[in-house]
Each structure stands twice: as structure tokens, then as C-alpha cells.
Image (cartoon, rainbow, N blue to C red; front, side, top):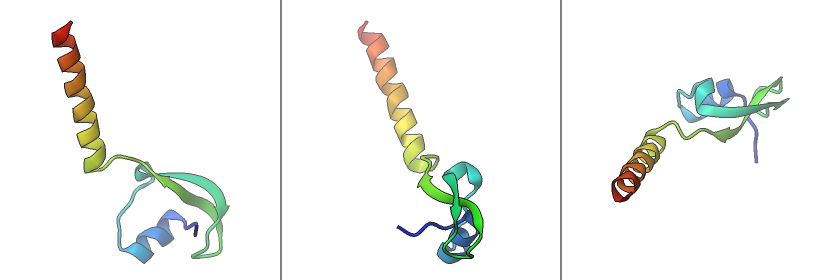
Length: 67
């Protein structure tokens, strides 16, 4: 898998990811060739993360009601 720094990733994909949206590790960027923090995983901060959090809260409330 290609590893890109946040700047190269946003430039290549036309995205606006922030450091809070990704998990990084210090390595060689394949886009610019510099030693930088490169993206290794994406955080679940988007709509999917919000829905997952809301679902967990609903499950907790349902569990509390059954108790």
C-alpha cells in the first residue's frame, strides 16, 4: 500500500482531511519523498462514526430500560 503524508493525500484525492481524521506514523512519503508522518489509518469521525456512537447510546438506553 502506498503511504502518503497528509498534504500529498489531500492534494492527490481532492480531500480536506485534518490530522484529527487520520492516524499517522513517521515514514517516507511516496508523494513528495520527504520523511514525514504518513497516513496509516483513518479515524471514524465522519457520519459513520456519528451513527455508530448514536447506536451505542441507544443500545445503552434500551439496556437501562430493561433493567
